[in-house]
Image (cartoon, rainbow, N blue to C red; front, side):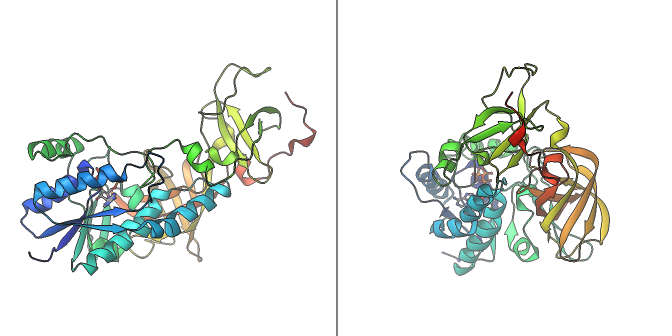
Length: 378
Ligand SMILES: Nc1ncnc2c1ncn2[C@@H]1O[C@H](COP(=O)(O)OP(=O)(O)OP(=O)(O)O)[C@@H](O)[C@H]1O
């Protein structure tokens, strides 16, 4: 059999199945590769075995070879340790961004090269194009509802040159239809959700296995204690679920939202109102920025940005500092911008790159929260 020119990352899902199908139809020699990145812990919620079986079945149906690699120690060292450290520091990391950079477009790419291939392909929804200066661009997918460029913003020129996204110009509905017409065993398989490779689990229980729970006070921004939390790192800015507070004397019967976390004092701050001013910010600063093109377009420019995956891109002004970090000012206040999450910049459909959000000017972020020790409980 001819050496595969492209190795397709086969996850056992419908997207990578159709990515392989499309490449196969073009007639080039391809092979699949299934990665195992999380050691099955016997808890029953790791679906890796089912996924592996499905990946094998799809490759069988397509008549292509499949390879296997275990990157679980690489995932642990390159993604999971950082994930835990971020949570322990009270931030909310995005492991999927790191997983793409550290595993899928690093170890998987290296493995494909070791197998003699020139390219890797995945079932991600994003596109790659060439700009006028001959640089590769990462573009949003044709299917805006599925666009995954946000998670891929850490890719650079070298990775893009070696990558193919066969689904970038397709709608998800057409992907499903194509899978069904080709009788792929994954045609009707449910889309995966949850954290990359860790999967769908009871998140609190899962995190609790690695970070000891430290219960503490839930307070209003002016310091009144209105409840107890099981551990601040279980909560994210803007979150409503899981607070277990309600019917607090002196307050309206309205939902409460997390508006701040003070890890040092082990306090979770909450307020009522989905757009509480306590969680609004207009300015943020980032850690070192990664540019897909390799360099910033200017030292100072206007563009749009997302501070979370499911969000309309927001107009902003970006200043690039000498040390490579960004200072970003949005045209309109933003809700629950969360340190640890990624800021991703766009120029129209072009993903310029991204950086981890370090700080914001949300009231509880930018100055020390009021010390509650002298405030009586409500
Ligand atoms: N275990 C794995 N082994 C090999 N490749 C993988 C694996 N997990 C994910 N990938 C690759 O990364 C792509 C995006 O992964 P993601 O977790 O976002 O899955 P998805 O969008 O649900 O796609 P799919 O339907 O193929 O599972 C997949 O389409 C696949 O090409």
